[in-house]
Length: 446
Image 1 (tube, rainbow, N blue to C red):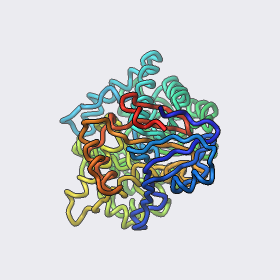
Image 2: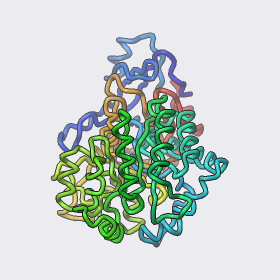
Image 3: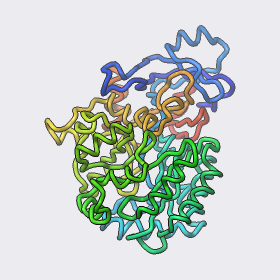
């Protein structure tokens, strides 16, 4: 059986990662067909061929993962904690979907018993799908956010999350005031930011529901505490953009509502950005903030085709998010495949994505978005061992491809094309096993 690492474990596997950006570097994808990753106390001490590392560390415990594909843990840069139980609300555009599906469910998290159950389901769903780090839209209720952080720390998930704050145009029970938003967020920051694997993200829902007072309170928190992240929504839906324009008549565009409050920074991640103007892209690039692309959600809600080429040409960093529950599940493999489809449909306006691009978007791009590239996102020495083993069970479609594949690139392409949660055999977070599929593991014994 696969063992939890002790002091020193040498993992033998075919592994792939993208320590360089394949959008800029054609050699961004690195592959070891019979590779070794030496892990000491949850941190990667060395990588290379298995033969080299076995010779250098002959007494290290060996965990033999041959027959599978070892990838860095996935990083989801936009997902909603309260919305797992409303996945599948199809046939509605964004604002109708919020009113009928998302917001009634989010109101239920005022009940701490309900919120605890949702937090357990949420963290489990992410980890079982290979996601070891997530930028999480929390709850409108501080008690529910506290439960989320507690469950994330217990389970091993690295949650970058925060209290969602709004003061208009939602259900009344989801509204707060700038003063209360500041005080409740401050208390959560002081308790959880930097505790274990947990980090805090200041989170106004979107400018549509957040007045200037709320945005100013968010900015005050960013100034007061070091290392916070910021996240919100932007330019997801044409009707939403028009409503924001009416609410902020002095703003140049949607981005300017955040920009004027000082909330567009290197550690800002803005979800969707399906309909940006050129000025917005230029400012995002200048501030090195990230657009979190959520392809399944954009398709399900009919929001539009994400203009990846325009983002890249402007110099805007892009990562991936599932956007549960507007999205259709917690799988970053599915998001990568849908991102590929959306670019194919745009013809010359799209970007032809390769498997290397998809792996980068699902891993290191997310680490960079969250300013965690020195900690996670690939298998470089000194980073924590966040990893997922793709090892399909016998008589499954992906196993047939794995058995017939003539190159590692083919394995990676097939993993994104047909991989599902059941194809994941094991997930590690910080070197600890946080998920293990019992069926089929005998073949992976050392």
